[in-house]
Length: 206
Image (tube, rainbow, N blue to C red):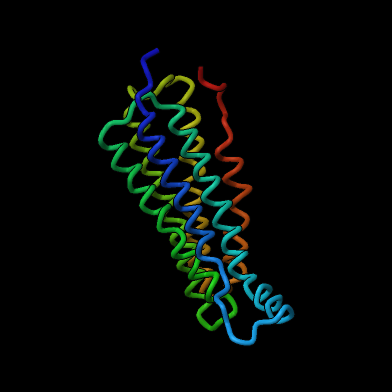
């Protein structure tokens, strides 16, 4: 078996994922205000529930994307320029995820909720699309796989799941203009889907 040469790209990617998750949490907070008391502070905390929901939803999404990303690189021994560039695009979308997350958390309960949720669902779909393109590039460079016979079925399963995922997020984006609640539930329900899709369908590679 040839030596794996993806340690640097994996370390860099993990760092970006860590930054993205940290930025999600930083966006939540309550600024100091006049007349603060124990009672009205509790009210302020409870009023922030849309931001908690958005954070929780986005954290789970980023976590599952990271899990899929980690398993992708378990299956390849090296990365060519195309893989590195596309991986960079994935990371670009991931590190900007706090923006749509903050947007949806801020505008839930307002007249702008439909646009906010459509933006959030559409942006999440873009992340999945970038992962899909990354996988397509990898399967077109089979020589870079650790074990093509074992890895290709896993990639094929992942690609099918990502195509379906892009479709669901596209539907959620459109549905958001009619029912923000249903669209959010669709993004929420994708956790279970991604947990299943990212599950290994081959034996662990040595």
